Length: 199
Image (cartoon, rainbow, N blue to C red; front, top):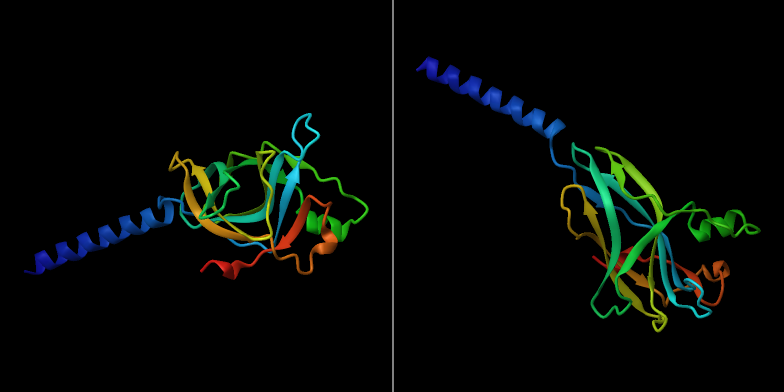
């Protein structure tokens, strides 16, 4: 009887050691996205057009990997939900700073450097990355209204190879409280983000 008990204890110890090693070293990476304080939304120009034919949305995203293996973000986009008629906004690049920070710290300097080759990006285990992501779509007829727009932040990663949502956000373009002084022009504005809109 004691032999069986010893074998059982040894097997349990081996199983625990293997599972612990797997959890610490091989556990699949899980990508999470944090919140943000401000976002930019409006219309710009694309190509040689004289009209405002480009939908622009920009905000900071904090990505963190809670797994034990690295995750590669291959692509990212904003997918509209509900009554949002803005269409899918594709990744354009990352800016050095969000415009509200740029104007607050350097009001005389409005030029922002953009990295259009940021993706793909590797997020190591327990690593956090924060960048200002720019999303765009060419559409001359669309105009933002002073209301709420819901989007899913969707990504393609090295694990999934297909689009999947990681966070839903609600952008309220009817709220310009405390940000009106940062408006770049009549077509592009900065808005405070209200994280409690979606629970």
